[in-house]
Image (cartoon, rainbow, N blue to C red; front, side):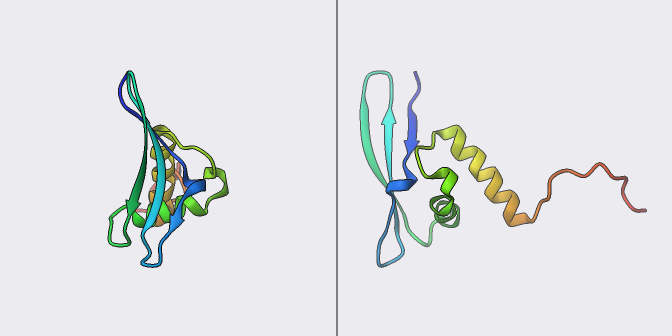
Length: 91
């Protein structure tokens, strides 16, 4: 079994300096550990994680696949994508 990380956005905390602390559980073949992932406002992923913690549907545990899906949704919303369009291009 490879390492698997579960993020817990419902337990996140925001520090006075804007740093987001996000609890996580890490599992591998024979162990479990807990971690606190700190995302400072200067981090590339900061806007994404701030968005995640405000979304009620992500209020519980997110595995790595759910994080990837959330990232795709976030990136799409930032670009203004409306999904695919089957219409012919205007020439």
